[in-house]
Amino acid sequence: MSNPPPEGLLLLKGNLLVCPSCGETYGTHVNTAYVSARREDREPQEIHVHGITGEVRHDSEEAPVGSKIGVGRRHRIALTGWCDGCQGEFAIIFTQHKGETYVETQLINTGPTYVTGRRSSL
Ligand SMILES: [Zn+2]
Picture 1 (cartoon, rainbow, N blue to C red):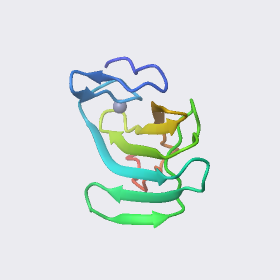
Picture 2 (cartoon, rainbow, N blue to C red; picture 1 turned 90 degrees about the vertical axis):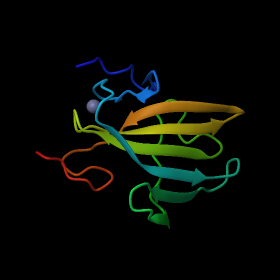
Picture 3 (spheres, protein in one colour; picture 1 turned 60 degrees about the vertical axis):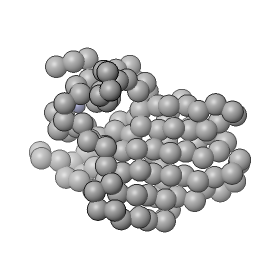
């Protein structure tokens, strides 16, 4: 097993995503795109697109937030996924803030029922 990347960083091995939880590349899945559309300091509009079903939702479920910059001052785009190897669930978050784009990873699984509704095998 590889070492997990430092908390909050997005790491690649070549063109492959590294699981932010266990550090492996094999078994990672990215399934959902979250867009928190927002003009500077305005209220966000939350949009979710499921990459497998094609379902598009406009609702109040907030896109995952990174720990470094929080919600920032502008829009945020997050991709969520999970890992076959460790069953961890993660988000890759792009946050636009003061002319820069922060890129962070965040672990988002919260127990036997994951944020995406997927059930743990435990
Ligand atoms: Zn993993």
